[in-house]
Image (tube, rainbow, N blue to C red; front, top):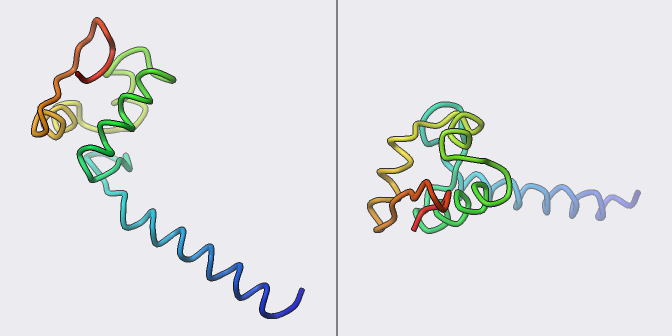
Length: 88
């Protein structure tokens, strides 16, 4: 491989890693969830829709504290609705 191509590829990969490191943070346990509350809401509702049957299942899989997650989303006016299995 030409030297410049390898350098660009490495640089591009580094930028992506830096971006994710910047936008993700730990929210209890070993889980990496978005720090921004609106991004967190989007991520959690998508996971609840596509992957997890309940908020407890999501928290178990993500190894995160349910109360901390609910508190973070409550700050932007969202509460978990078990009947809909989503934050509304």
